[in-house]
Length: 276
Ligand SMILES: N[C@@H](CCC(=O)N[C@@H](CSC=O)C(=O)NCC(=O)O)C(=O)O
Image 1 (tube, rainbow, N blue to C red):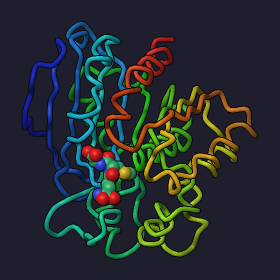
Image 2: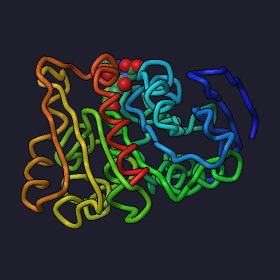
Image 3: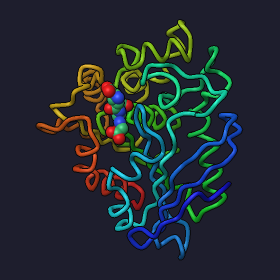
């Protein structure tokens, strides 16, 4: 692992690191905020999965997470959203290929050799940060935005026991029925839709739900609202009596201004679960 930068931040350290990824077969970059409490012992971990077109950097510099995480003594991980570089497949569209990994393991050409973001986020990166930083990997929570909200919800429900709480900002909720999902799952996973269900938050909510609290915020003025399928996840949560809150925030759009506005709520929500 290589340290690319380290800056003192709210008493802790905001770092950016790169490493050779076995899962993705290329070097991957991630951000990690570690609060000052880590000097005394391992601290809980909150993951932030970012959306389409993002690198590790967007949320790290725009979401305003570090101050709230420092107050709670929680570390925050900011992974990249896909493998990148020459030799890695890509597409001209912003919603496929590099910057648009959708948190799945691709099985189809030309994506399969590198696009293994499920394995990267669920296995390789946790192992790496757990071994190299003072993090308590028995206390993890996860959040994310848009495509990253989809990733947070599907990883939380797909890995029972891993995360104590899950939240999301404007998540893609029902990708198997959305143009933000059908196109990408066809490309990455193939035309057989039975392989898609494990990556659809609404279907997972109907099937198994999440063994912990859920918090979702989406803006009523979200310019991508029709692609998110929020109503389908809301219905699935209500039908199974999921422990959770889904809020529609008046006038907010899809941007990081929306995310930053409600970030304190989300970090506090996760802190309650991580310190219970
Ligand atoms: N370029 C696209 C819009 C891309 C966009 O809005 N990306 C969002 C995530 S959308 C869902 O995953 C984002 O977080 N962008 C990065 C940022 O820093 O704002 C278009 O033109 O439609």
